[in-house]
Length: 398
Image (cartoon, rainbow, N blue to C red; front, side, top):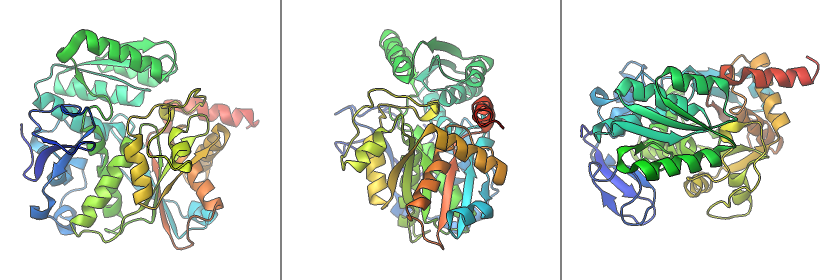
């Protein structure tokens, strides 16, 4: 495998065992726990100037802090997205600065591309010919695109309520799309049945099954800090489903601190919909892991994950960062999405606007200080669910 110098292999977050990347592909062979890429940061000679001297053109500009070399990557120049200042919204929230990290500018329109570029590179280097996953929509579209680029066959399982655009684009990218009646739990069940049938012939790209999707998403934080002239934001608010992006960003924050590039870490906040908020409930009840949400009911399908695989890591990140978790109603989320678009410009996806609604709620609770810097992560473009946002306006007679 074409790995980077500092990448040491994979470490199980549950039992602590370590494995060579060429030998372990998914869950821990010893206990079935989540594997996480590990690095020898002490002997890595990089600093802010190292990255600042490079073109801001792709997340692979941080290759020293990723498992694979840039030359071996299955890439479409994902990452390097805009950090949009929103001074008017900062005034509304009563904070010093507010930025929106706009992931809608990625190749397939969402932050999912960050995870898929690293996970698909791993799949290719492991010799896979067919990849598979269950998805609420965007990760499936992204997997189809990156599999096509890598010359692999993709099998994508989507719930019937997934949006038309993501379904269509899985096919356009040449993927094998399997629409399953019901919600994400039904799609996952069908995916697991298919994996049992095909065995090792199919390489799983499922979040937290592969160690590499959350690893690609950590570059969100690298970029944000660099775009703030290597100053750490005080708060990051993230729309949370399975939690891979939040876990990755927290890992990146601790890595930058360990490297001496930054001195501080941000407070991380998970934002969910009230109709499916297992992480918020677990955080509020002081538990180390979630209990599955019995009856998910939200229009925000992208974060309607009733049984998130990474909940324990998410909850650790929230507590270690002195952050928190917040839920908003569908009405509040859609209102926040249209408010951002009409008053600041960025087009937040209907699901992604949970982060904006969460930021408003946190401001109402006086969590933020008047001089604080707040980053709201917009994980995807509004174009994929423009009808949902427009319907919200029509319900108000607009």
